Length: 246
Image (cartoon, rainbow, N blue to C red; front, side):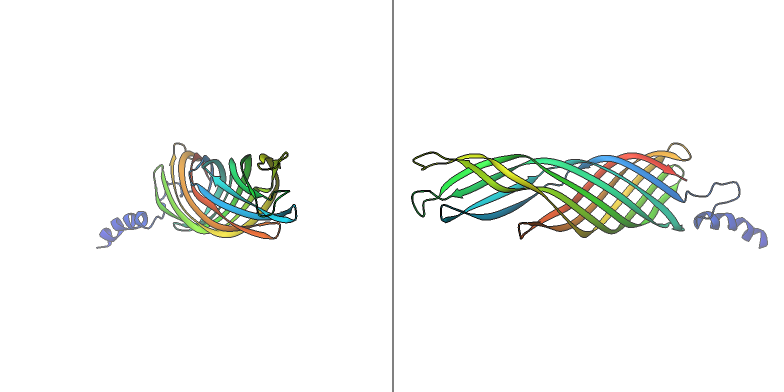
């Protein structure tokens, strides 16, 4: 009976993830660096009014946001068995074209606005995320590493906003032409969440390659001349890169 129990002990140790004599313990610290793409698209709008020729004009701006390349880097630490904690910092930057539609009061006739449409090129947006997470090693056998994670995020957006649509007009002023835009940079931040999965393949003891999928979400209010503009931040992050373990 004693011999049978002795034979079972190594099997139990393996099942519970306890390293046997002669085996290296599983890595405690991991570092990952990724380049990738955020395919998520979004759109938001802004409207404002202005005084001209003793009347009130208006402008509506639509901001489409397409996919963009991203960079992120992070680290994780194993705390107890398969559970751990980690932190990832991500950066996404993009440029897009915003469309404007303005109604410009007529300088000679009341209630006779002129419609002027235009486009604002190279509207910049930069998004930085700090993602805290609890991580669980779903697989850690041989060279394969699979980690699932989730937790809170802090997202910050820096966005170019149109503040004025300029126009060109000549007598008899029945029409007006688009003449460009004035812009300003605004910033906002908000708390959100993240969930993700990470797959790594260690081709050396401390070095490997892997891929990651992370979903983040937050709604940020941008403050523009006492107007609050809600914008969606985050989305799907797909990346590939290096893995380091210690």
